[in-house]
Amino acid sequence: MKRFCSLVFVLLVVACGRSVEAPTGESVPDLGWLFLQKGPYTLQTHVHATPGPATFQLVTDLSLMADTPEVVLSRNVTIAADSTLKVKLGRLAPGFYEVRLRDSIRFNIGVRPDAVVSLPDAQPDFTAFWEQTLTELAAVPLNPQLTVVPEYSNEVRTCYKVVYESWGGGVSGGILSVPVAEGKYPVCVQYMGYGADVYYFDPSAAPDRIDFLVSVRDQGIFKEGQDRWIDRGLASKETFYYRGAFCDAKRAVDFVASLDKVDPDRIVSFGESQGGALTCVAAALDSRIKAIAPSVPFLGDYPDYAKIVSWPVHEVFEQADKEGIDRADLFQMLSYFDVKNFAPGIQCPVYMAFGLQDPTCPPHTNFSIYNNLGTQEKRFYCVPTCGHAMWLEAAWDTERTAFLFKY
Image 1 (cartoon, rainbow, N blue to C red):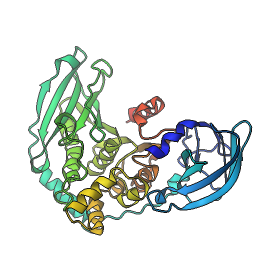
Image 2 (image 1 turned 180 degrees about the vertical axis):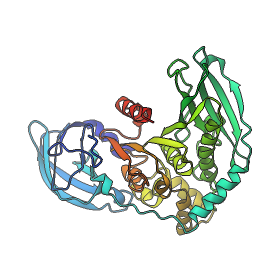
Image 3 (image 1 turned 60 degrees about the vertical axis):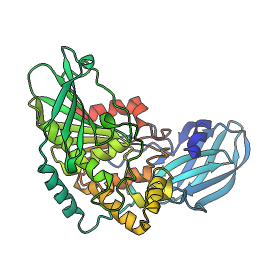
Image 4 (image 1 turned 90 degrees about the horizontal axis):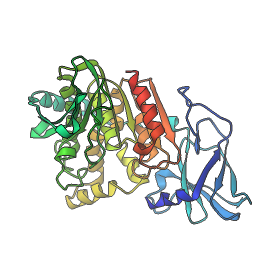
């Protein structure tokens, strides 16, 4: 996180050459430091820095955790009197890079993210493992329990706290808001971030829609002081926490599809961070989801993740070391829960958002998912100055709503 704090000292007035469009034909708002065409490239930006000589380096993101990061460009530059910096970058390979200017300014740029290669590494029994897991899940009765929440209910929609059974004896559920009037309604399934706090829907905000905020096991409405889940059950794919959590994501679709007022042809989903990962996994495991809009999705490309940022990988490593789990065995186990390995199974339309400065779910890991999607109906939305908090970007919320509304 500290690497990106100096971003506040950089003013985003960037020219990346002529205006371009994303490969899908969708215009990318505020291109910032994102280069979408083939090079050579020139970075031109205003920086909040004293004019004069400065050192400039460009470091590959996949080397940021290395003892000696890989510097692909290093030179002495001059910050102009109006604080303009112009640097010819030449031709760069697709990927993400950290700009280091003097000793204090750090920010990321991206080059042709749709061409970043992060090949799936699913084990030979990946499909069989998940088919068996889903067979076990299907054998568990849903047994939903719905409790009215009066303070978030009115004459427009009724709010319920929901609990139902899931795989392996676990319980899942969430917060449900259903229109009072009779009829069939579309439903938006929303998955929560890692350890995020529960929120309730405004009962008057969407009178023609059902909203369901999903809580996977031990999180959301079930959270009782815990703050770590990713290092649970590392000894095997059978015991890893996300085996159950991914089942809970799928079970949420089972639940909403069982509701009398749900139109089963109009189920859509979104989520941020862990919620983005769960959104992707649910769509891969259940074709009843008609469109998804994940933001800064978590759990993509574990091996490369460990090369870019420290958290949460260090927690996994610490626990694995305590249990005497070899690194190679660890990554093999994690491959069963790598969202990029689920991505080929996603056939519905996808609109993914990412923050170019994200220090938690870095862009490379987002595109390890995006570039492996099975669907051809996909596009992405970038906020160059944003870190991980895409949920604070009002423009993205508007974009996402318009996209999902079509389905």
